[in-house]
Length: 252
Image (tube, rainbow, N blue to C red; front, side):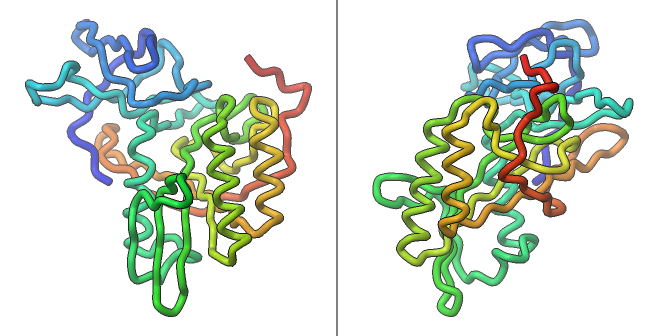
């Protein structure tokens, strides 16, 4: 997925969930739309460099959209994290259509936003030979102080309901898949965040034993002269359903 010509800035603060103050290179302070309704735990760090997408649409209230943030890592490097949760489904759809997720390749038809018993899952895949697969996508950006990735970054009743829907499909003999789209280049594995949402963690463990498949894939960010120009799904990552944040690893 290609980005528009992104503009760098420094994050000053995120507030009212959907707003962020960003200082551009010339010192101008702009208000950017923050397309993320979650807690943004560990990815809303004032003083870090961020990347904004500009808009020339006169009907828009805000001319900027916050896309990415650069986060310092313990090894001295910098990781990129996508804060735009609306990008995850597009990234996964692109990978599905290109056959870049081997276990989900080979289906003839793809439908977005599949309705299932009052719920809505992200994708339905159909094929005369392979049957039907339902896929729910969750974006992962939380890297805790133990160096591992976790989901969710706050209590997610909606996420738990999605797990129950997937479990019901699996019980009916349908293929049901939870796919973690890991949009943080410093994360190399994923676990349920029992320290933040123990109900979600326990539900995930239960439904995985009941036939729900759990996958995780990393996002790769392509750069040209340091500017991010594209993001896409890359390598598969391990999922550890039993790992929990150690008590010796304090959380905020």
